[in-house]
Image (cartoon, rainbow over all chains, first blue to last red):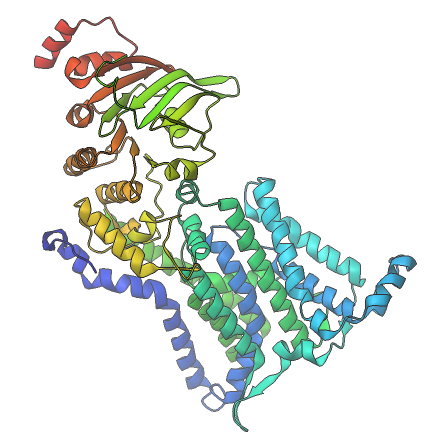
Length: 358
Length: 262
């Protein structure tokens, strides 16, 4: 592979420190996960690693992990999507309403109601497609807005749609929960898959593994995936290389919306309902998972495995604190502390990095 | 203008290029041509229009007026991709590399080799990048290094490798040595000579007379967005060229020769 002259390879480049850096850079958060597993096992040796508990953790992190994955690809382009929690609820409520058209609020004109009633309730194979489709549409609105309107930062556009999507969701549902969904629709968020008579895994874990695997292949091995990283690294370089930056950004926000919609499907399945407060503030948990997972806010850095680990860190911590009967308020405080610590380590690493460059 | 190149077809020619930004005139009726294997130096003070002209040539800005010709053929560029498809490459002053990505990925950014029409063929790209770097005698530890780990000179070399990876006819360089350590400047200039020997035309924007007089065959000066002066390198000298940059053509060759000796 590398045919370099030996003289060009200085001692500096060979030092252990330099060789270790990329590894820590890439997999540091996995060490954190490992540490938390050890702590969990030490504190609750009987329960923590039991099959039931592990499967429980997976089921609980699934919808946040999907949201985080979407936010992650946006953050890779040095953007941000604050609207994912609202996309989640809008996709969930749209689906719930299509299953229960009788719950349409009073303001809907009778004519519209009557014609909707002729096609609704939709069969399950239509319902299951509704959240992803709603998600993609919302994501494209975000992408279109920030590329065509030239708003100064994605923060603005998605802060706007955070409000708009949640408002629409409350408007169409009248702000009340709608429960009872078809079994097939609930499968991904609720069902367990029996591997052996004794061992079963949550279907949501299967969904996570497939989606994360596909995303990893997309980001690392397709042209658009690499261009997403290039845009995060240097948008000017991407532009002069002939990459259609705006088109790529619309794809990125649409994918983020798709994942938020799927996340809504999982949550609806788990809770057997659509409820207006779903995903409220969830965008911050998703962003936390991404940042804990080692992605840089300035774009171009991070990987899918890190996002999963980031979501796992939050999930394990919540689980542990619940097992130890620690009040919810402490959970918030601890998550905050972890975010700050993880990013502080990143700052230290960067300092070491720039020292190397000099 | 000059007499040496009447017979052959210029690789790249710009005729009567004007560029307006609103009410501001950046370029007015500018002509430029560069022959195969020729290194053309472009000089001018800040705001003389050098960078704007290069952006027009490389397809980043459309010209308001005027016509471009590649090997005698009239062309219209709608973006950098059009220009690159015609073999015109630009090495930007700020390098336009993605620091978070590997050397081979930067070299082939936007032109990745695919496998099965979908997947980027990382192995083929890495191998071709290595071969290309070897051809240019550019040494890096490994093509899988991230660009942000490289020195300024290595980055410049990668940027040049990127510009020449696909049989470039013309490579435009905007101040390629401005940010380099002295030791690295020579390497980059030798790289330019190498390109010239391979028949590539090079347009070099530089403030450094040392660079101009080391690699260029011809030098032209822009002043306030217009063609100001032009000469084969053998028929001028540093002080005259510096005079052009300041908008001064009166200086006699005699006195400037004397200055040069001092």
